Length: 171
Ligand code: AR6
Image 1 (cartoon, protein in one colour):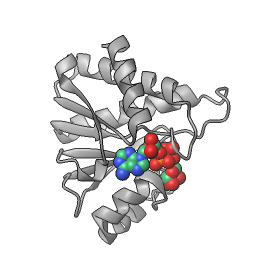
Image 2 (cartoon, rainbow, N blue to C red):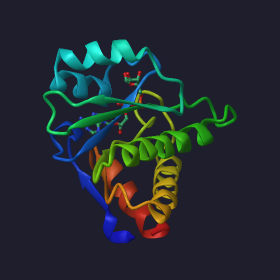
Image 3 (tube, rainbow, N blue to C red):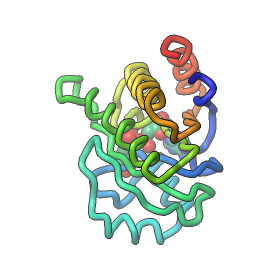
Image 4 (cartoon, rainbow, N blue to C red):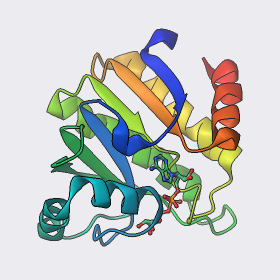
């Protein structure tokens, strides 16, 4: 299964994959961080579509087209805001990965790229978030043929190093 996972440092908006995952907020109307970058690159039609979708609860995922992105699809998921760890944050974050992978499988997506959901503006501790990302991905790939490939796109060296270390432990 190891060979189905790739960890890279880079910008998710440039990934030539079938689907990229957006770390959105419940409004799905855009924001800063990776969400802002995805909306800027995809162009205004993305906002038109996400406006019609009408929001997404924390831990769930919604699908839109990719418009001007190289990726055909954007899977919008909403991570939890870290509030100390007693507000179900871990389960909600696990749900983001599970539901995004499930949406990808339903679309027949072969390759999907994830950012580090919730670890920016939402302040989820990076180590724990990375463990959740990898554990959920391993579980899903163990029982599903698609997506064939999962790429974790790390923004900056600190995120990259963390992903590489956790990968060694979990896979
Ligand atoms: N490619 C890949 N990763 C990126 C990129 C990029 N272009 N830009 C930032 N990151 P964040 P969150 C990384 O804050 O914590 C937004 O305003 C970033 O360095 O984007 O889930 C939404 O609208 C970090 O490692 O998402 C929500 O309101 C990771 O992506 C809120 O922020 C996540 O950081 C969501 O907060």
